[in-house]
Length: 463
Image 1 (cartoon, rainbow, N blue to C red):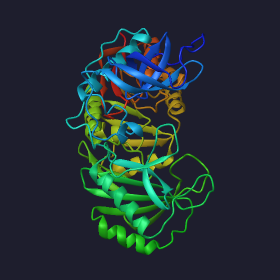
Image 2 (image 1 turned 45 degrees about the vertical axis):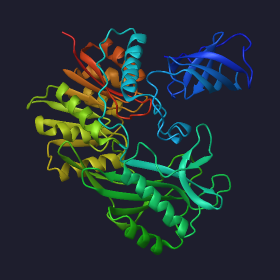
Image 3 (image 1 turned 120 degrees about the vertical axis):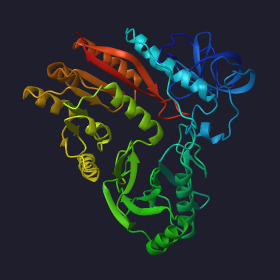
Image 4 (image 1 turned 180 degrees about the vertical axis):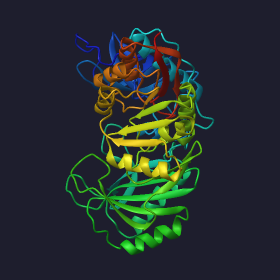
């Protein structure tokens, strides 16, 4: 993997607009090719490892620079023709130029290298992928901007706030794409303006769509900077007429000057406040602010894998830390005696309790608390668990959480990770608490065409 942060101590050997011939030797986490000229790193848009190219230098900084390909002298055998150039231009799908088998191999290698860097000798299995690695996302939050006097939806050019209008987002479900497209057209017809973050004028900040793949239910959310929507009734009727799968239309008000997409204030404009989807035989209610995995096909594989790794018994007590809306907890509840879920986000716990009731699950309790604090509290009270599932945010587990696991001493810990760098770090710390890795680390391609990789690993108490 590229050491992008290695300091280059001499004067840069290239200047802006120079042409240089170089080999592409690696990929960054942003999907840029890496070339080196006299040891000086150049990050190359649309460059792939194994390629040789004539580059035009576009920007030079102190320790690295950027370049674009003028002529591809030797293309990679893994390069595929781009069906949609915007996928790379906007960063929607930064690996779309790399064949899918090569993407899966790169992700396996990424996980292996990170464990090696952490000085852990751990086997890493081949990445589990998808049959069709496109149009998989069941949710989109698409920004709006005024372009030539009318509201447009699209994505920002990489590294800028310049919106590129587009109708297709390549990795989103076609129903989500259609919802975004139709909503944009309706807003244009009614003369609704996009919010401008510099002037503070305008109304629509984002258009969000969520789709339940198992149920066919669609939710559209208008994220607005103000509460009043002009021509509201007409907009509602037009969207109802043109989006027959829509069962929920919500306004989310975000009046803050912030980069955060969603506000906390929701108004139901029409239909149901939530949509329903199904995962591994359980039903889930999903609201505008609910956390729900965006790729249900691989989420089912990931959670099945985690459940099977846990070797669950009917007498087991299980903790689901960072439980969200209860997906892992409810997936395993039928096989164990008791499940305890903990999550710091109160609305997520409310969703988890509703989902437990919806599925007739009565052996799951959900607690609103910081997971490390709650684990310490349970451990100090002498409570224990046979199995702990963790699915933390990208920053991984805290030292406090890992120490509480050492005190509680569950037999098995199943770690579902969205960041293999923090996974490797945390596994090393868990080994110091008396655990060992059982079997192989299993990468799962939850986000095809991007650099992200999920992984799941089982740890057991060392004998």
